[in-house]
Image 1 (spheres, rainbow, N blue to C red):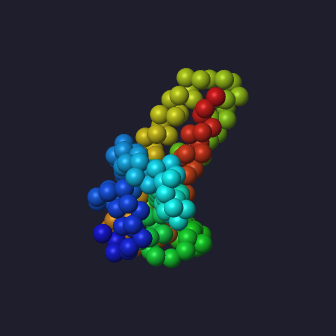
Image 2: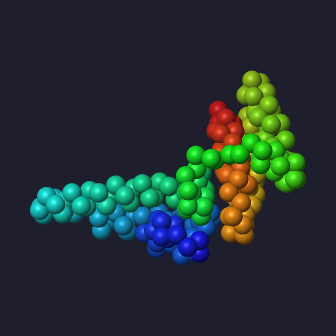
Image 3: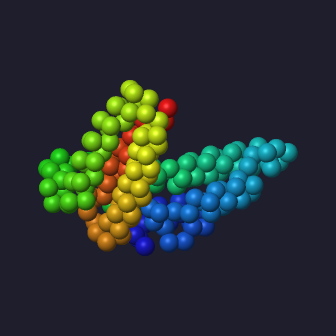
Length: 183
């Protein structure tokens, strides 16, 4: 899809077709367990040391791959990295963010909502308003789903690394706020 061997490598390692941001986590977990059954070092205890070492390395790779693909933010960063085939050290360009902030109404609205929700969460926690925190968590979950879909669409249709990376930052911010709602 994106024409990169690394991209296909992580997804194909777990036999996931049509790699994208939105992923079937249940299928991912099942395929992860299958891979572990094949490569786990306990299966190679009584073999030669080289084979045992190889199985240990494969298991480490399997675990790292699974952790990247199961985590929403790491998966988004991985897809960005592979699609653009460069280091994410230039993760955000401030001039472009200003442009996106003024041009993309969804992003603009999302930023305003996140700022308001952060203030609300602090207030709800201060007054121990648990039901409001639960409502806020549901709002954040819906925002995360919306941003995930926008990210996936943008990643598929354009080479706009800055807009995609901005979505990753917003997804990360939503995750952080979601953690704040836990009492």
